[in-house]
Length: 135
Image 1 (cartoon, one colour):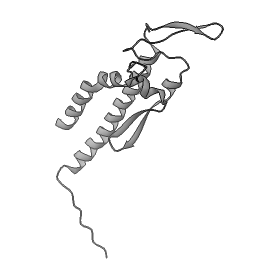
Image 2 (spheres, helix red, strand yellow; image 1 turned 30 degrees about the vertical axis):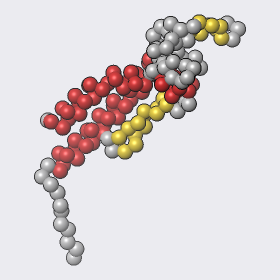
Image 3 (tube, helix red, strand yellow; image 1 turned 180 degrees about the horizontal axis):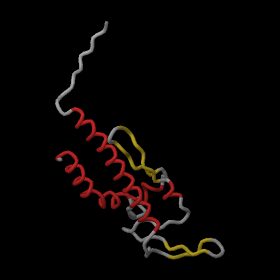
Image 4 (cartoon, one colour; image 1 turned 180 degrees about the vertical axis):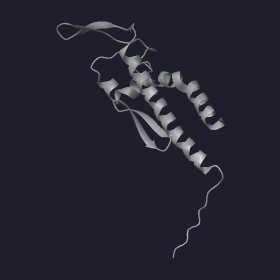
């Protein structure tokens, strides 16, 4: 017959539940960052240059410091949240123009959309983590 020795610290079940809760919490906030970044691009009046797009269309670009103005939807569609591991998520911007717009280049001043999306949830996220592990 075999023999089993169970090695467990006191409160291991509680810690495991909290880690599962932490994973869900991090995922929720990653999705909020994604949603905030997309909303910043798709909404709000932009105050940059207005120009004709095609035969009938008019497009108003964003000014420096504003989130980029949506045009084709390519940037917005490239923003994706992804679980990378337990309590580890990433918000990726797959469109290569995303980095140029976020941080600027020698010719283009920044039009941040991801960092402001993160800043919107930073304090509530830290408060939720503290609450989760202090209860």
